[in-house]
Length: 248
Ligand code: ADP
Image (tube, rainbow, N blue to C red; front, top):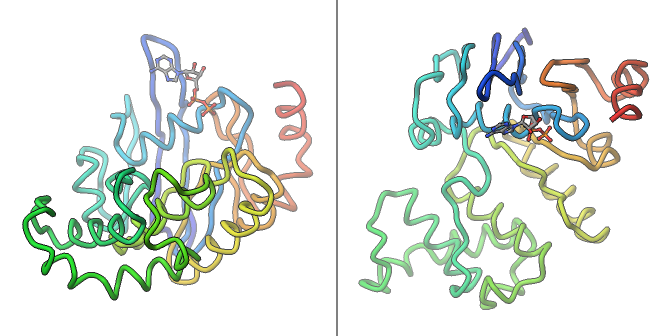
């Protein structure tokens, strides 16, 4: 276990009708790190991710966050502790502008009512912070654009902004680069680096050059089991990892 682990899983196991999708996985994410979960298709990454955020209940195993056992906690309660999955709470409303979407997320964080029709004055209180968050993710010039009209990469950036509105201490990102053009990949990579300056990040990501560029540590899954764990330079040379990728 890492010296200063913020999130740990011990013996994490998920069976689907006898099929073991995640098999006795131990994972330890160090506070302040960017940790990537990689592996060939069907390795169990998504299932593992869903277990950690409690979208799925594990068959066996224990998950702790900042020392607290969160194995039996509901997803929303875990989010309140500061462990937030991107796109978990922060759905983007397609017919609202980028700015309105971030304002709504800020309002939800405060626990105000969803009734955003009611009071424009209440929403206006969040304008400054929302504009700051949009600037953080490079969306200032898109503030007044409807979410539905945003180019794909910008929409993902907006999703990240609405997640940041919740002020998470740790973020779980599910394939942040999926479907992105090269220019978007560069921008989101820079954004994740900035976000990580004062947060912990665990991400599932297929793009290995992104993983190499961003991650401090990597856990490789194959057939539900941890195959290797360590920094990219080490893990990428591991013959078992190479074989798992080639053999997949
Ligand atoms: P990855 O994200 O690494 O591609 P998944 O976690 O999606 O892998 O899947 C791991 C294995 O578990 C796959 O063989 C998949 O078919 C199986 N699996 C995932 N979810 C279910 C489910 N709800 N029911 C049955 N099998 C599942």
